[in-house]
Length: 330
Ligand code: NAP
Ligand code: GLV
Ligand code: GLV
Image 1: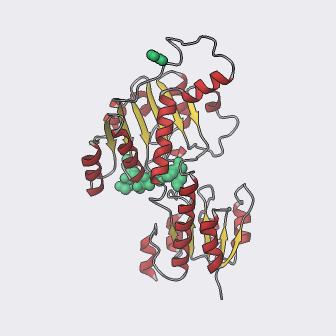
Image 2: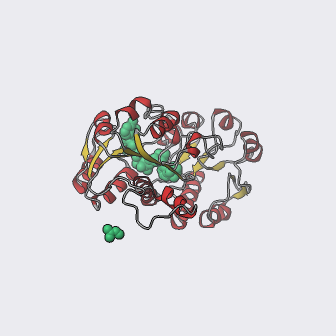
Image 3: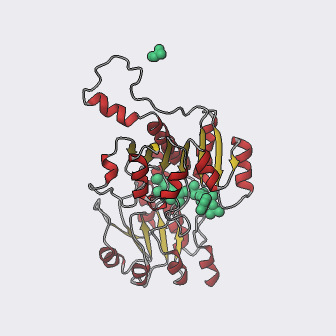
């Protein structure tokens, strides 16, 4: 009998068609994610789920899906999935690393530039009809990117792609990461990035950009103390996960002038609640979690996600397995 698959949102056809060709497929077609109850009801008889980072796949959801064998995440980050429970129950989890690296690094750079040079604020100023003086010697002054010190927190795939781009801006590049390995050594060689401890990176960088996954260790790793140790007038950019940062502490650092500006693609709560104090601050650029949002990249993610799913359901090892230890028990 053909396996059934539940896809929790419309993903690009390039991937969806592969899944539809191979399995009985049901797609949640609303824009809003299904609730846990809705997900369980729709996926009850399914062997696989295609999940998004906004779907909370916790112990109770996994425990309520007796036929589940595969969770194919349409994202590289998978902090929304209880992987420990999945592994215990023999469920394979896959993700979409690599194909979105350059696109997300581009967005991190867009935020670095927009925050440093006040692009969003200046655009609002022009549109509001406030541009009365032809050329203002003191109008919308920002900070220089060229030759500044860039601090990269987490030198993985995306961190490294951000470092590559920094070469063109003649920057001094510092980074912190958990371990020194062949990958970080090759990035150092190619970009001139220098490894440092987290405290020195915070102290010495003019621009700080975060690229760690959300884990128990990285949750709230940047809070009041960390903002206080940054240079006065530093720029802070986050395209990783909102929960890596204490958002209240960030709001304080932005309103006190400790930070020149911030650029954020990710938030503690998404979508950003209309009550968020961030919405009232002029010196923060806000975008709605669009790091990987290019036409080409979203198609590649869909294909990768679908191919992982097909291989895993057919009993083969998918290339992008997050919990390979699950295969040992088979
Ligand atoms: P990656 O290649 O795994 O890179 C993450 C790096 O962070 C790894 O080198 C990791 O080291 C390091 N790290 C982990 N904990 C750390 C810590 N406490 N301090 C310093 N470094 C630490 O992942 P990636 O593909 O670059 O993606 C990174 C994250 O970006 C994803 O997990 C996701 O949450 C986010 N993301 C967001 C968007 C978006 O749309 N905004 C798009 C793509 C990805 P180890 O390997 O030793 O743990
Ligand atoms: C996006 O945030 C991802 O993790 O792919
Ligand atoms: C600015 O437009 C300049 O010419 O300095």
